[in-house]
Image 1 (cartoon, rainbow, N blue to C red):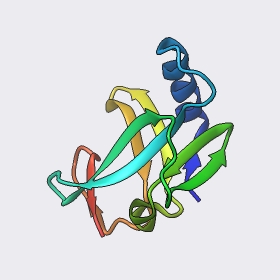
Image 2 (spheres, rainbow, N blue to C red):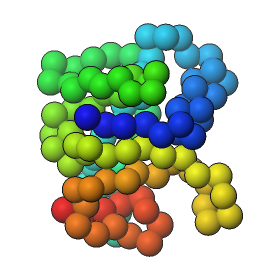
Image 3 (cartoon, rainbow, N blue to C red):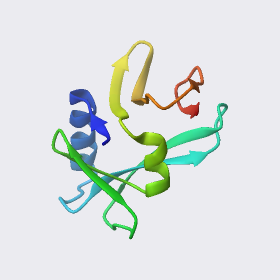
Image 4 (cartoon, rainbow, N blue to C red):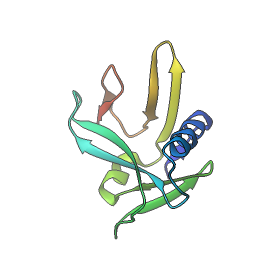
Length: 108
């Protein structure tokens, strides 16, 4: 399961509305190589499911990830911060053994 905090939910819905995306669009979360710790998170809106996609619904947000990324993202929570320490989405990933200072990349 991938979880969505209340703040992240509000921001995702706001972005979807401002982009005029319909209900058929979902949040695609994936893990890609790169970043200072080796792996980075990628977020995007999508409306096409792939054969091995894993689909979750949490806090009224549909989240889709490919099977390979899910192995890194299991039990991760997507959050959003708009405070002085940085604005944007971030992940609380219990599978990460370390993450970089900016929080955009991680290692397992």
